Amino acid sequence: MDLSVKWQAPINLLDGDGQNLIYVAEGLEDWHDLPGVYMFARIFDNQVCPLYIGKAEKLGARAWQHFRSNTRLMNGIKKAASGRRVLILGEFSPKPGQSTKKCIGLIEKALIDHALTEGHRLLNVQGTRTPAHRVSFSGYLGARHITGKSLSFRAKG
Image 1 (cartoon, rainbow, N blue to C red):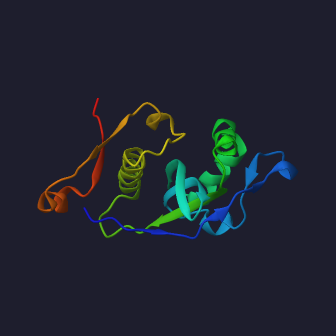
Image 2 (image 1 turned 90 degrees about the horizontal axis):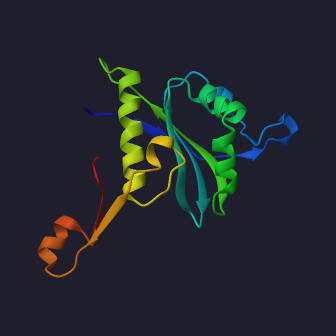
């Protein structure tokens, strides 16, 4: 299946004290009814470090739902290592015959798996207990063209 997501520029998380919240973000009204995936992340030295990855049929509404009611997630973001806290939205564009709900679920799972194999510690409940392993390769350059210098994977159940 060929799936398409267009990442948007990061949206800074702002202090939400004025609204009795931990964080808020501006500009989400344009995303209220758009489907896709999202990452709460930190940016440090131009590196994006995902903290939480999710999916939503209505991205803007889902983000506000987190701001209003997911204190555990917002506190986890606040306590994360230094860096600028951001929300990165990815709009899913379904092709004819593709189920938006099914596709964004597949994309979310792929993003979580990838983040975990890259060594990121996610605040997602389903990702916290999944160990990632890294294999380093040296020696014959011909074989390393296939593997690279290292590869990461998750152990299955």
